[in-house]
Length: 320
Image 1 (tube, rainbow, N blue to C red):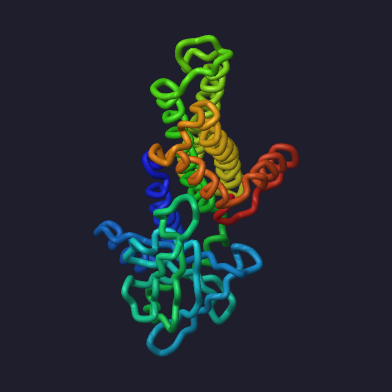
Image 2 (image 1 turned 180 degrees about the vertical axis):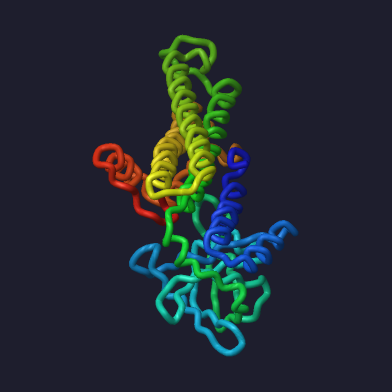
């Protein structure tokens, strides 16, 4: 899906992640209602991150309880998929300062979804602003999201696996477009003394390197998925959850690097003509550059090194 359009790959990423939260901390009644709605075709959009906070975990949005249920006030950003959703899953702090996840129906009074995402990549994820002004939500639709970290889980690893798959999709299509352009449109460099750009020894070597690194990233991505299957097949412990997170972190390092490398190398190998707007090849780099900023891959190196060298278990949150 992400090879065709990584924005389409990113939109359901939040839905899959939120489904994991429902399964991990929802009551049986909440699971029945929310999961049934998804089976009936309802889509879930994200309303978690905010701007102007100390870090991505800090929340200013608040939810208060009254005789008729709950009321939410706040402002969100990076609200991927909310514009296309039936449920908007809103993270907020309750009166006790604990994080909860409230499911707000689209069209609820006081809920405003603003289509103002202006990033130069991932342009159709609609990851813009959500305004919440005295938005009412039923008590049965408020999940104690804070409970998710009371026990070991693979919530973060599952979320990260999908993020890595999006980058792998970008890389796969960038490599494919580089090969097609070199074969069909590019001119050989004068010093190569060959008839076709595809016969240039340096171009051949670079394409080979890209394919090897792409296949390595895809192999680690596949291995990480297998590890998640293995870990989830048994009661999850702190050690098995860490094993899952590290397997995904290793894959995400390579998918990040190959998506950026392939989308940039495409132009070097294809030549100046490839920069013409009619080909829209810059979309690969724009998408890769924007999406790989989701969380810093430099911390993946640290997590992997600390785990293998010192046995340090990675942090437990949605970014590892």
